[in-house]
Image (cartoon, rainbow, N blue to C red):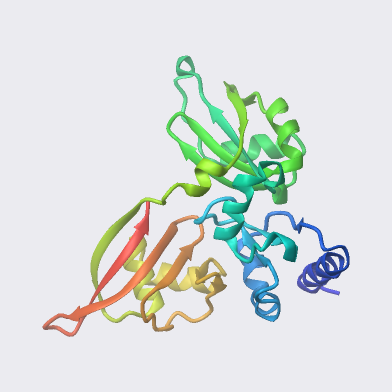
Length: 263
């Protein structure tokens, strides 16, 4: 049995356990590729309190959350409100890492991830890593948070101050977006990616064929896919954007488009 089938089989087994026990369950964090594989499963169990949850609305890495009927929680927004009243049930926690001013150092996503994995932490126990100028907010599986808080005292030679927080504030934070008004040959996926992320069309096409592009959480496979408006675009290692739609046509026949890029 290949890796993908094993992954989906594990999800079905989790669902069987949830149906029998009627209690809150979850998976570990999943990559966008794995989340994309769950589209059929999520459609089949729509309305049953089974949905993707990353700790805050715009999370890239998410876990699959199973919420029993008595909670009356059926989607991510309702889950955030529910966990505010039952904070001990949050499936994720935040490690708020702060670099002391005397360190005068800057750390990136890979630095924090490498330090955690150096502690023997598996990638699936770690969600998004949101880097700040003075540190980072790292989402982690709840039951691992105490260990990580205790052991993550430095990244490389840079010391850290680490404290554990509930993700409530982050969950309610509004993502910052920049409105871009662009013109493209047509609202094909490769054209839009090229314009939004300042890469060549060839690079955009290669990213699509390389499995790095997602449209509304689903792996994109066609460079000539025509965007209609309202699609969320993710280009791994480059960022995210919301394609708002076509706003007009230039005299030379090019399309004017509006896009909100997450910053």
